[in-house]
Length: 151
Image 1: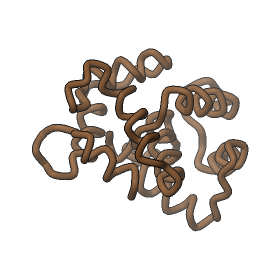
Image 2 (image 1 turned 90 degrees about the horizontal axis):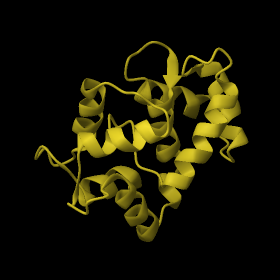
Image 3 (image 1 turned 90 degrees about the vertical axis):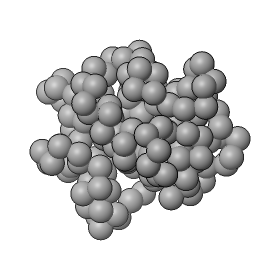
Image 4 (image 1 turned 60 degrees about the vertical axis):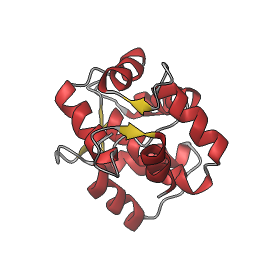
């Protein structure tokens, strides 16, 4: 995912979607960067202003100054990466690799996000997967995924 979807369990994604929606006052699928700290604190994170700025810079893929849900997922996974165990990472990978192919595809990523009400363009999803492809082999393997989540 455009470094933007470090991967989370389905349960975490649902929890984050619920919190994100509470702060999406206009119902447009985006929250302002100012609201981001409040959302993260509600979810048990405590980022400093500097950490928020750094995260926003890293995940605001379209540069519009707002955070959409896929960008928010990336940010939350980055924030949680330090506490993820190998078992948690494997479980999260399985959510995005339902056919156990060993790779995350655009169609699998799209299916998971669509089930959460997120309609992302194939171009955006491809950019997310390219960013996650650490070894640049054109596929997001478990190793790419685990490396991304742990960094």
